[in-house]
Amino acid sequence: MNNFQWIWQYVKTNRNKLVIATIFFVISTALILVNPYVAGQIVDRVIDGHQDHLLVPLLILMIVVTIIRTVTRYTYQILFEQTGQNTLFDLRVDMYRKLQELDFNFFNHTRVGDIMTRMTGDTDAIRHFISWVSYQVLECVFYFVVSIIVMMTISWQLTLALVAMTPVIFVLTQQMAKAQHPVFFAIRQSFSRLNSMVEENISGNRVVKAFVRENFEIDKFNKYNEDYKQRNMDAAQISKTYLPWQDGIANSLNVIALIFGGYLVIKNQMTLGDLVVFNGYLWMLNQPMRMSGWLINDTERFSASCVKIRQMLATKPEIEVEPNEQPLRIQGKVVFNHVGFHFSDDPEHPVLDDISFTAEPGQTVGIIGETGAGKTTLVNLIGRFYDPSMGEVLIDDHDAKTYPIRQLRDNISMVMQDVFLFSNTISDNIAFGRPDLDNSYVQTVARIADADSFIVRMPEGYDTIVGERGVGLSGGQKQRISLARALAKDPAILILDDTTSAVDMETETKIQHELAHLTTKKTTFIIANRISSVRDADLIMLMEKGRVVEQGTHNSLMAQRGKYYHVFQKQLGLEKGEQSGTTE
Ligand SMILES: Nc1ncnc2c1ncn2[C@@H]1O[C@H](COP(=O)(O)OP(=O)(O)OP(=O)(O)O)[C@@H](O)[C@H]1O
Image (cartoon, rainbow, N blue to C red; front, top):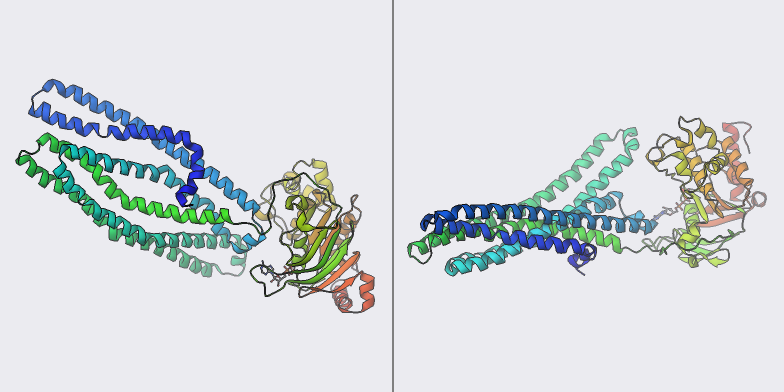
């Protein structure tokens, strides 16, 4: 399917509008023929033929035609614009839906700036094509065909002399399109890189300032900015090479018409009135020749944008998301059966290797281990953010792959390492997964997460709007709101990925105490650095380089006197050194 066929799928819902627009377009464009003809009549019949009484009616006719033409032209332009806007709207809806459907794998490999370029610049290039370029092309084709037919009826010799120039224009247009094609793709890529760079700089502005790297960032931006400018200059250079020729040839038609037309008038093979009429239609032949270069540019921009959008819409998530199904309540038993995992773009490096364990419903599993050991990846397999490359993950004794993904995730809450809050009220952030929650339940879960005490001290309490990504809150406060958000879902499986790393040990103990006394038991996975965070767990796994090297309860692991024992001794020593009388 080419780009035109593809975009037609969106445009065709506006069929009625397009039919009306086309009728107005035909009326408006056909009326263009009238005034030059009337002008010819004025010359031949009023000036040469001395039929003075015809002057006023002919002038009135010209005015009426001009008014009708203005109204019809305005109407079809509006209708084309509406069609473009509607298409843009539908396209954005589809793209946004697709973004919700795409998985971690896509977002791991696609820059935010690139996605933003597709959602804004690319969609607008398509709107511009539908709202403006499409009827300009129609107009040009109409002008070209009609002007030749009409001019033929006036003087076929003169028409042929002019039409002889069109192959040259055609070849120039073809050449220009060929040269512009890769350049517009390069412009599109460069713009996306520039957007990504700016987006990254804004997101990372605190890091930039903290490391005093503003000048480095400016230099980096200048490089991308320069590249974008250069690509546009390349396009301009190509236009500069071809457009003056096209323009020159289009203009030369006037000269040819005057010289050859004048000759025909002198030879009495054409009346002066006919030459005036002919001249009146000449711009209609000129216009398509002049416009063709610009329309080619816009069409190339349209094509480059279509390719990027179609690529995104065609991307299939590795894990298919089915439409919403009936809610399903799971018990929360989790079994890993010789699970191995590698990222699809890096099959050489297994991130998880032969992991096996069982967590009964309501049990707590603690996962500790060095950084990069694979702890986050392991819990990501439970919610099917990735599927295992080997072995199987069983949820309630069924392969996790057999669950529709949304049904499964509805039963799982994750508090992620990198807390993200929406720029909304605290209350809405907590109720994100269950928007129908009443305020008292929101407060209950906030209390369990030890967030209530600081929220009520805020000027607007639960109605306080937090900034983008939770700006305005401390790291620990964000973690606690994010924990409350996870609890509000009342999940069967709760995953806490380094959730209490930014809170003090006293608060952590308090939260753990509250979690342990929840009315509905949840299978809880706690990833932590401090053994104190997991020591009461039913099962503790110590991970190293993608493998579980020791597992058991705190007491059994201590009795083994292995790696866990040594980590514990080390942490105990550090804690004692740092603060006496802590929870250990
Ligand atoms: N999207 C990805 N593509 C390729 N490799 C990845 C990706 N995400 C993580 N990894 C690699 O997988 C390994 C395990 O990462 P993971 O985040 O699971 O570790 P972790 O134990 O949770 O670490 P930390 O305690 O620092 O959070 C790391 O070596 C990491 O480099």
